[in-house]
Length: 378
Image (tube, rainbow, N blue to C red):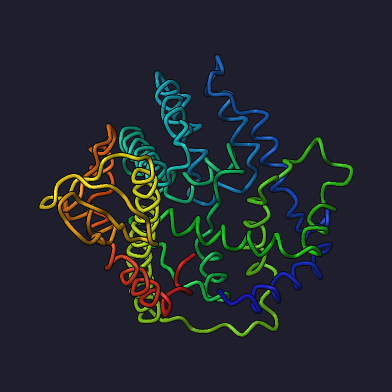
């Protein structure tokens, strides 16, 4: 990301903070109040679910409902016979714990939107109102658990993504990449946490209102506020915004995919190197234990010394001692030990010891291959 541009936006946010949050003006602090109020009201087990949902909708202020009125539509339909329980179950499934798995979370969103569409087709088949989409579903999650979810206003988010040169594409509502959008927001928060002035002025909003505002421990409300305010209140002043073309994004994604592939190869090479080192240490330990060493041709022998990674062995009837490289001797099965755990040792380390010469070379090649692409990883 273009950190210089992002810090300019932060500076503009700080300088206009009071104006943006004037109680009699824009009052963007409402987001923290709204999340707090929603959480106080929303109760999945409420006896009168439709009445509770109406209050929850009201608590969100204007953050979810636009001219399409997606939340109001659910409220209206929850008041119809039998539908309150249908919608209760929809929210129950949407809010079910997913362990932070964004693939599962996207599946929950997709299922929720499918249920919304069925309700709309059932009750208002010709209406252009009450349509829920990716944005509204993400908003329901954000209001319910802002510390683990992000709000999305697509136009505002794309403006900021272009300004900070975030090249990854999170797609459209029909094909939305939740993981990419969350990665974008995570990256913004990483930089927010480094800016002490921004953090200080953010904390000032809670003065005298701590019990009425969501504490925003993970700064997920703040990151949405910056995304929204940057375009709405002209925080791009002084920021040189590059026109990121579709080809730029395509090339970036191509290189990122390559980086991920090479990082995976490096991880395998590093794991093999660690396993090789473990195998060598274990082999040396077994040899030193006094177990009888047997060679395929020379038979049982005794260890004269361990010279680095070489075994020096004496065999009956053979005048001079024989020297064997430890990894290849065990890896290729030339030597065996009369030890109770030797079979398990070979099962675990035999293949890796056989590749001992190649593994360090593979690691160096993997490191060199990734180096030109390292900036495309998170």
